[in-house]
Image (cartoon, rainbow, N blue to C red; front, top):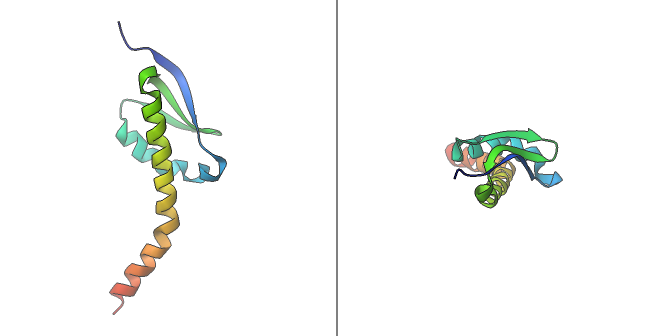
Length: 88
């Protein structure tokens, strides 16, 4: 018997993390090339997600959005450090 799929699942992203969803979406799509993702007002929608993969995909999406937040927030610091080191 084949795997059962949810037609469309929304992974809710907390409001203060939603500005990082677009940046994280590319990484998530690379991690799960057989799934289709889209941004929704509540978070990220996943089309045709096998039910037994829901928790793993949810965990991965939340982790990737959090990593994107860290990347964006620390980018100016990293750029300043590189400039300071290479400006000599």
